Image (cartoon, rainbow, N blue to C red; front, side, top):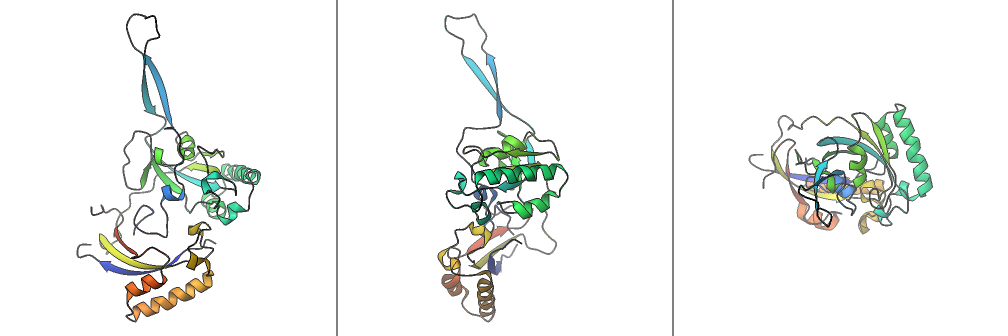
Length: 286
């Protein structure tokens, strides 16, 4: 059902030695890139006012504000984003499905999905069928003032505020919704479920710790990752044309044609298309 970029990779493996959303690849934007932060004050904290001691003065005594996180220190959430054509977060470039909806239609759909999810409908299935974010729509977050425990975990302040506002208030397995708001939920309506954290990632047996790759990205006009903003060359292609071209370039590369030349001529990624990656569960080289 989803359409993906077609990429050709030439692997250059280091002597001692793919990336997840936060690594160096370009075919899967990071969580923060897919759902950029919205400008707003720090959210998700409660302020406890503690008056200073001493005798009352003619003017009110100064107040010391103690800030503490609300909710658990670390959570994992999965969401369904239901966007619409005029949502400010998309800046006029809503994905095709979202661009076909009004705000009223998006709200109705989001609340219908909320009811389905609470009634026990498979949440993963709903994500795949309806979400305007890239699947599986799962994000790990550390609370305000809490140090992330891994590269996959995103500080609360770097996410759209709706994730923290709803997510940190949920118990495991509970489902909530964030209404559209230009500050806290600028992309639309988020149906959010608190899910267990994923198990620690480990390197698959037999794979190297670190690799360097070079690739040729052959995109096409309806590829969902471009969110309706495919590069000029990619806009002129259908998915079938992209696959045919990618297969042809793959065969030419395997036959010994200069890979750098093919990158410069055909890739829809920025030159030189070279990325260094640490394997799952392996610390990146600095």
